[in-house]
Length: 139
Length: 156
Image (tube, each protein chain N blue to C red):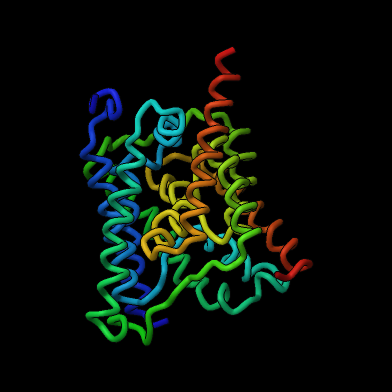
């Protein structure tokens, strides 16, 4: 990937981080207060992020033949129903237990939320075990 | 009614969500990449492990930009927090065992299910992928059940 693309992604990542911090999602307490129905704000975060992204994903390929800095628009397609369902169940248990998902686990460090290093270690160890398992059982 | 559903107001949630959506949008417009977050754990491990799963091209080819994205997340949060926000560092009081065990289960699940709250929740739903919508319905329901159960048990 070109240096210009990497710098762009770094800057966009910063905007992503501003969004996670502004919305309060970097606080596991805010996420948990949504999951226990004390404050439904997370629905607004998800809804407004999805609406914005929906417009771009559908309009950009019609207006542009290719992305501004790279050769083609990528897709990340999910095809395995069984793994998707099982993975979603496990992800839900872990997210509901900790109030931490991957984006905020990383972003929150920027607010000095060092206990999230424990979350990051857990997420990394989980991804590592999955990779070992998936190497032995290719889809 | 609105006050009871959103006791802390709605503006930060909407503004934050739009920032996140714009970030994912700009990454797509500029580089064509779909910016889910959970892949960064597997793609970074491709530097450390020779195992077949980690060495697949999809992870090796994206491992550098995914780290730039992760670095941006930390810098952006720091910029907001210390530039516009509370300006004093903040730590969660969720018990460390919950962060560790929850992280491990969520990490395994996100990779098995090929996405998390950003990959399926934002990118997948925005591209109207059926399996992403199914995934979000499942993990939201399970997370709500889990959090309510933990809150109940801690209240006993």
